Image (cartoon, rainbow over all chains, first blue to last red; front, side, top):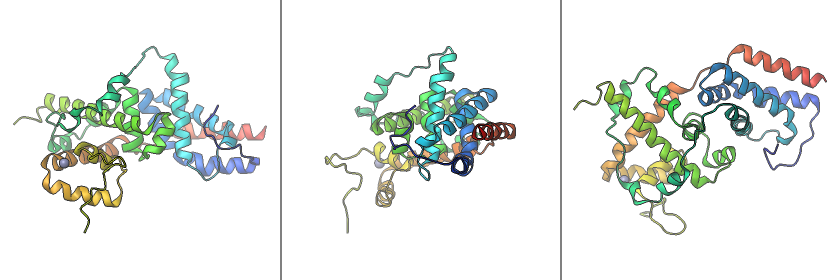
Length: 196
Length: 88
Ligand SMILES: [Zn+2]
């Protein structure tokens, strides 16, 4: 499994344990949240996270001590999800990438396409609306929002985690935000927030 | 005095409002770009409104969708499995 192009490291068992405890385990809450948002099931999330940590340990010599452990772990989890978990589930969950790619280059970008969602209605959403809206997005869109807005990853890190060019990260984020706002605007409407 | 738009790309293309806003939102803007955009918002109502909404959404996402903790039994299970592996 190729996770990083870095040359193989050599660690003693003690060093391996230290890296695992000091660099990998501190990210477990973020990892669990990511796993849960992807699978939408607590047990599946546990399996996915456990699997990720075992893989990280097995391939620990591909990891260079003191580098970006969080990005490395997120990459393993995302790959496990695609290769193991998603294969098992039936839903194809395909995104129309053609549309995504051309979207950003079109003249449409400067037009205000956001439905009439207002800050006030957003702030009234004190329940699970935001979380549910995020969960309802297609996996690829949900993922970029989690990586950028929840976890604060940079474009370059996201590109490595997802194996896509930075331009695609940008356009996918743009599209994801609009989809999320559309969802929230629907919620707002159904709850009567947007009454003029 | 500097009137140059720091968002201008190497190929001299002028960025759209949406592109500038996204760079800010995505946390990729330099100090210079942030300053420029602040000034820009004074003269551009659509940017001002979008920025407000998008930032509110970003903050809400952070407060509503993270901060949960991984179950303790999961952490214990992982630790046990790793200690068994390293003992091999
Ligand atoms: Zn503007």
